[in-house]
Image (cartoon, rainbow, N blue to C red):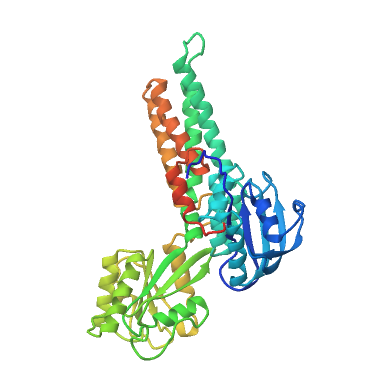
Length: 459
């Protein structure tokens, strides 16, 4: 995948999800898109651009497959920047597959994951950050995540990064001119001005990074494991947080044998709940497997809720669960469940199970989980947040911005130490390259492969 190589072949794929639906779309992009569309629809004339044509679709044996709407969009004013044809067919998987097969037989090749969006990037229709936003829009788990992706697609992050990169380029050009030419031809830059420019850019990067933690949570969510000994109410607590009966609840200890996973929206952040099997010592082969999966869920969690039955004293298996939680060393909340029953357990009794963890009381059977929700806000850093949409919502972008900030900090130290301009320019050039990785100017072939391999086929 060479970022500078022109695309000369024509690709095709089903652009709608697998399954039965009212409409399914097959997309064609490339220099032969119009000819292939005409061939499979047996049209005698070129389709009128951006006009929906009712058409019949045939296979290579001239057998009718489906009736569809044909839309042709000539490049460069198309999604990919190339000639694009789309056939909106009836949404049955067999019909769509046969339409695609007919298109491939006519000369197109199957598109790879994200290849339509890759071509949009290579042809200048989107920058790299906007291309990534396309995948985020498709996968957005909450309205807030959708809004963040939509803003990124509209260029909010790209504009901010572009302005900072251009400022770095302007500074770099002046500094390199100072190095390349005599002082009589190009006067030396005022070091105070250079320092002020670097300080301003450094602060802009800090401001951009300030919301990255929330943005990444908005995009990826926070994984929370509900752990504890059997029959303390973990499944009931999950149902209460979800406001639905997702997990089976009985009075029989050990009902949950596997890890259940569901999500809910907490202030725009998708919280991915894992209801785990009770942590305890057991010789039952099935229960052993459940406990092992619970341990893996605990290790993979971003935060943990240690659930205890407040209607009875601590038992040895509660101590076992607490020891597992301490060993995992994750942000933890202790939930004293069953507060609707007479209390046998106080906060003072459980402090050693998870030292420093907030302790809340819940009554899952009554959906009384307000204290737990507030504790989750505190633990994952939502309490006191303005709730606005983050500028940065990607670990990759966060790392690139951090790299740019650190490079500029190095350039600023060189100014403070009165180093020559070519030493200062090293850091500024590093910042230019780091910022270019976000929008694509510094993108390598390997980076593009990694990014677009995560896309679905057809997008």
